[in-house]
Image 1 (cartoon, one colour):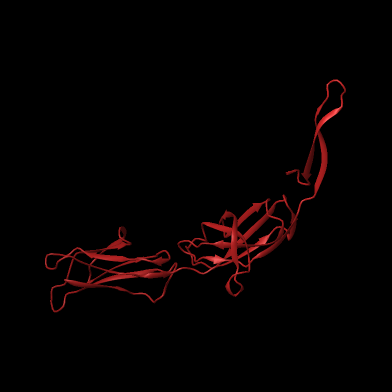
Image 2 (cartoon, one colour):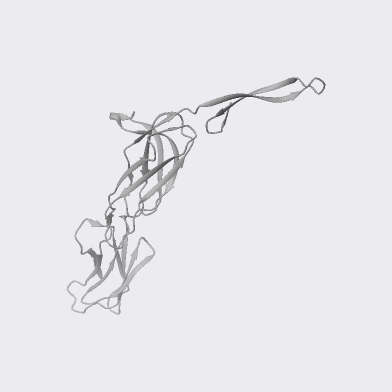
Length: 238
């Protein structure tokens, strides 16, 4: 009552590929064929299927998500053979993708909105969904080891929908900025990071005015005033 579990598909296994799991019950020199059923479980508790033992074998097919898995085959046994089980650890290769980011403007003024659009690209087999999750947008510089890009601050996140994610911000710090987009991956797709896009943000212009705070009720003369600075976007300046 010893059986082995073998994987009858070419390796490596890719997302969207139909995989056949076959449990083979090796009865050695016995001439009595085994009966019963084999249950196949994915990652502990998810039932992939149940198959009758025929000619010493039982098989199920499945499509697995990306990453490492454990598939357990549990043989029920019969009147002649004891129950038994075995497992394998197939690894399903996630799909590769690429990520680009673009800005709605190349230069702007502080306080004006800028929209960043991240675009994910990749080819998926039939039945495999496009990327899901979020894209993170970050400010940084090419100041890492060997000139690599280093994210110094996160400016926001955008939800991925139909392969794209957007983020609109209006509080970018004035200066020559570089923004990258990063996708953390999901069950089917690997992570991806874009090349940086440059945006020049100029300081907002200001206007200065005096605002009366009070007058002498007898003479009508101004007794208090405040200097108010306002940016071109209407934001008071301190």
